Image (cartoon, rainbow, N blue to C red; front, side, top):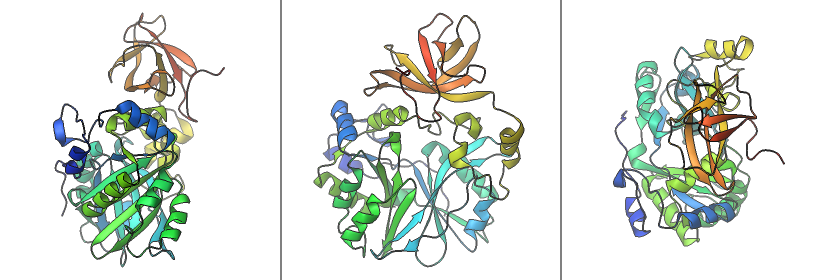
Length: 389
């Protein structure tokens, strides 16, 4: 069954017990914090925290030839099936990808993992703003005889453990939670997980995937699985003294790491090279996919007119998304802000935004008006931060 309806908060009772504070939307979205955002940030940067990210969409793609059908849709190669390991689970390598229109614009980004026991099955992990457009696109593109899309979001959940102690924390909490797995081998496997490498395990109707990630440039592990299994992981992590953290801290870490988010820094008007994700999301050696002609043309003969850049605002109120950026001594806007947070690590307000290609970093723009506060523009290509020296 395919669904693109709204997603509830799977772990809502767990959040209430921990004193969660929700945003203006109330309990329809994950908690903003749990009463002390500063302590949550400190725990994330010194130990580990767990964040509920179940608002993302999760889909299984099965059928006679799901990989073959997705190859012509995804910008990355469909990953191979995982290899069974001695600890009772299976270890594989996932893929970060985009789905494009024929004009090369983004429908969404997503992660693709090959999971399941007998038969071919793919798990799609999709940002919430990309769920509706992706479902609409796949309804048109996937022949049901060969590939079926099932929305498992309402019956599953996802949490992220982020911080330097994330692998140890997940290994401690996961004892007994990976069906048929040997704890010692699990710890070894978890510590070895790089970006998008994953450990999958499933038995008797339960399933869980532990995925290596790099959220905010920090060590992290994403745990996806059926709702009851992820709920058990959440409780196990808290029992192992892992502090819960809200979306506010996760957003701060994301921006500090210069990591664009779909629906915030990328949308349906974005070309992947504008957002700087082409090296991670596009495999130029694979066969044809929708939008490939535009991407190859940009790579080989052209350029994009704007690029996502890091922005250092200094000591100013956090600007709203969409705030225009002006070239120094010019009246015409040359870009706009997409994300902005107050960064404890950098000691100032920082963010990301699009800037015209003529303004090559390091350079300076003005915030909000031609005579607004000065904003330092930095490249996101290899991480970014304060000016050198």
